[in-house]
Image (cartoon, rainbow, N blue to C red):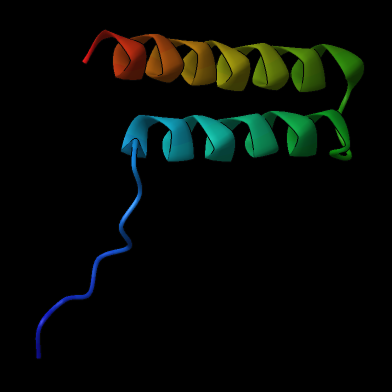
Length: 57
């Protein structure tokens, strides 16, 4: 069986969108404020890096 792939114009944007969703989920998690903020900042940094990487190509 062959593996089906989802076609996107820019896969970096799709990955960045995923990390933005993870960042928002981190804000609503049942953790302390410092942990939630750290997870949010980490996910947003990944999203920004992916968008910058995708824009360069």
